[in-house]
Length: 179
Ligand code: ZN
Image (spheres, rainbow, N blue to C red):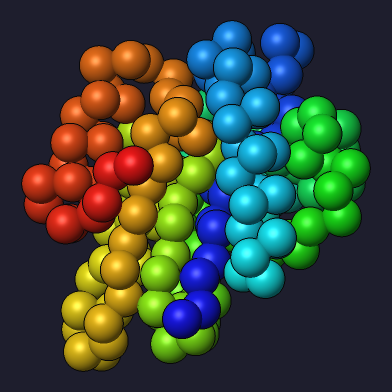
C-alpha cells in the first residue's frame, strides 16, 4: 500500500514570526510533530512531499487574485518561500503551486499513485482545506479509492475557530480520518 504524507505550505512566510502571512506560534508549535511524522513515513518507505506556495511579485495587487486579499507572500526564491525550520534541512521533495490548490495535473497523478494520502501543514482553513477538497473530489470523480487522513497535531490555522471548522469539515463532509 503506497502512502503519501503531503505537507502543505510549511514555508517561512506562513510559519516564521516575520513571515508575510504567518500563523505564528500555533504553526511553529507543530514543527516537532511534523518532523516526527516525516521520519515515520520515511522509515516505512513511504513518500513525503512538501508543497510550496509560489507567487510572482509582478502585478501582485493588480493582476493576481490573492493580491486583493492578502499581502504578497511566497515569492519564488525568497526567504519567505523556503520551508520553515528543520523541514528545510531534510532534503524533501517539493512541488510548487500558484494558487490555494495544487494544479489539476498534480492532483491527478497523486490520487492515482497513492492508496493513502495524509495531509499536514498550514493553514488548516485555507490551503490544507482547499487541497483536501480538491483531492477528495478528483478521486471521487475518477472513481479512485483513496483513504484520506489529516493529522490534527500536524496542522495549524490562522484562526482557531476556522481551523476547527476545517478539520470538522474534512472529517464530516469529506470522510477524512482525523488522527
Ligand atoms: Zn498564496
